[in-house]
Image (cartoon, rainbow, N blue to C red; front, side, top):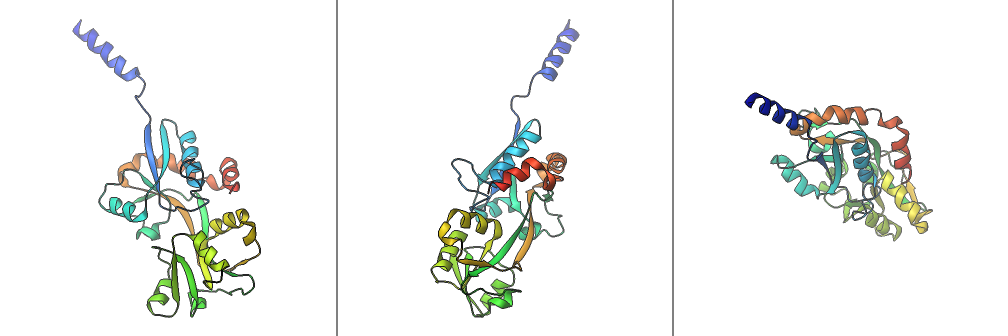
Length: 246
């Protein structure tokens, strides 16, 4: 009788449904469109990615949460970040060898471009092109080659809270140029008609990179599923349709 009771208990545990699906947080620190358009309504590419992963990976849910970079890095370094980081590149976290953290395949290719007035376009072929200029940049961000020139006193940095503010300063003639993400530039210009003929984006990007998921090693078990979904995503019709809205 005891053996039968134990067997029945074992079957009940094994056959019972899971209490809840595992939830993974995708922490985002890029508070700018089209990545985060509306936090309350969860509109933006990073929210679309979380929903896509939830649909494609059975038994798990993914949720995008904004977290300022300083707090994010602090928690990450202390091993207290209870999730992944979305939309980042290994070089931004001093992990070019990809040995400190795990990394997903790229889900989006991106560029940072130098924007100048259409009436006075700047030909950009590297940071030296900005010498002597007053350049609008996002507060707290590092721009390779440009920050070094700023420290050397060869150009002036004008910090703004976000890239839209930098573009607004450029439109008003308060800076000579601005460095912004190409997707952000395109999104904002489409939604602000007064800007459509005001800006010139240099053909040579200041930076070109892939956006990935940074995955702390404690979440290694989910990596095969992420690889399966994100590996072929550049040719995924559903994903391409989602990002084309922006």
